[in-house]
Structures are given as structure tokens and as C-alpha cells.
Length: 341
Image (tube, rainbow, N blue to C red; front, side, top):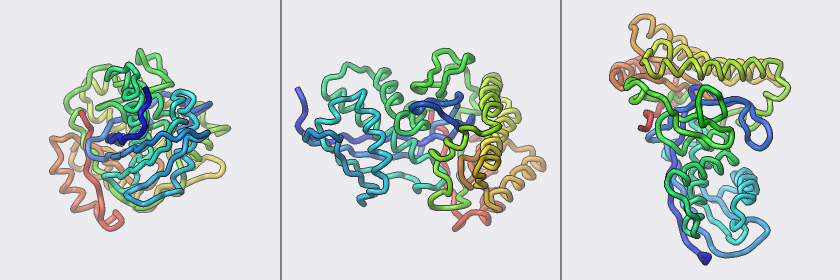
């Protein structure tokens, strides 16, 4: 028996990729496997209101932080069209979606990951309310599968800790269709990883992720890059188990720089790092050389810098940030987060 109307409230986190997902084929199928940390504090809170109103749609309106945002709606419309093939009852309802982030939109965090994963969670909860027989494990996998259809990285936000998306022989059970929790041992030093995001540039980034993925089609270095990413993921497996921070940092930084190298050598070319981004990277390298402290960086497709370090060194690194790196941040801003376990 259907529901006439109702509301569902969910929360879903963002994630930061260590092995980057960059390049896809077909309907949101990754060109290679990726690995990410799910974050603790960078969240999207979504309320999905629904009322029975059959249409060809499904019909919906989207609100972000209380404001109607029609500019966000085309991406959600594409998502709904894709998931309607798997959830036909969507066409029986009209939806109103209210979302808010605990972090600034377009701040270098994967807001599409947390936003789309939250929406997928809400739809799976509606499925369950309508009688779908899904236990917690099946519901998470279902939500990961649906979230992927809206944003590839969103499928990794449905689990805590380290998460793998993309089929790779080194990780049994890995899939292109959904993400899975990382199945191997993880040293305690990586379970408390801190992620401090330096806001070099606030506001909308100059290259949308969807366009960035398109640039990989026909890119002369795409195939070697895909092979490199999977080799790096395989190399991380023993590193994550042993707690070798130096090897971890080296792999993670190479992944980040390789991602930007692909954009700089694409047609057209994009240079998303700003002078202050480069200054921060040099400052991190100098600090690590001088102190030996475990600190590394990663970058998404933008100018902002994610600093990764163990919880044991939190105060030392925050002192370094406050004393040396804040001058490179717009408005002297940064966000402090950590891996969720």
C-alpha cells in the first residue's frame, strides 16, 4: 500500500579521495578503481518531502539552505531520470528537497558526494517505508548503487573509514556499480587521520567535475594514468597495514599531482592550482624536511589543499598552519575534519 505523503530526514558525509577517480565510461562507470576516506564533520543534511502526484517526471523542487535553487535542479533531474529505471514509483510522487551543508559549498569539499549520497539514502528509506525488504547492509549497498548515478564519488560516502569503488583484482568484492568498505587491515595511525582543508579559493571552482571527466576521453595520457592509479591503490594495501606514513604520503601526493597533471595536459588545458596553492605545497615539503613530522597533502579538482596527518600530531600541525600557512588562505580560512571510523 502506497504512502500519500511524508518526510524523510537523512545525513550523509563527504569524502576525500586518496586514489583519485578521474575518468569514466557509460553511465557513471569508473575508468579505474579509487580509494577514499569518509569524513566526520563535513556533512549534507537533507529533508525529502513527498506527496502523491503521478507525473512523467518525477517532479521536484530543490532548496539549498532555505533558498529555491533552480540552478541545481538540472543535475538532480538527470539523477532522477537515471534512478527512475530502478525505482519506478518515483513517478508517483512530487518531491521537495531541502538540503544544507555543514561546510561551504564549492569550498574544495565533495559537496556533490555528500548531497547525492544523502538524496540516495532518502530514496532507499522511502523504498523501505513502502515495503522493500532491505536490511542495513542491503540498504547501504542499494544507496551506494543509486548515489553513483548522480555523482560517482557519492557512492563512496555510504560507509565509514576507507572505501573502495571500482573493480580491481587486488580487492575481492570490489565493483564498478557500487562502493564497498575497504576489506583489509588498517594501522591505527590511519584510523585517526586528520584532514585540515586550507581554503585557498572560496566559491565555485573553474572546472566542473563532469567536464573534467570528459577531458579524459581521448586524452593521450589517459590509459597510463588509469594504470598508474590502480598500481598506486595496490601499493597502498601493505602501507595501510604497516603504518608506513612516509610511503603513504608519497603515494597520496603523487596521486594528487597526477590528477592536476592530467588537467594541465588536456585539450583545452586547465591550471586549477593558484600561486598560493603552490606556495603551500612547498611549505609542506620544507616543514616535513625540517621536522620529520608526518604531514602530507592531497588536492581535488581545485585550488584548495587538504592536509593529512595523524591525530598524535594534531596540535603541532595546527600550530604550523596558524603560524605559516594561514597567510595563503582566502580570508585566513580553513576547515578541520577527520576520517570517520
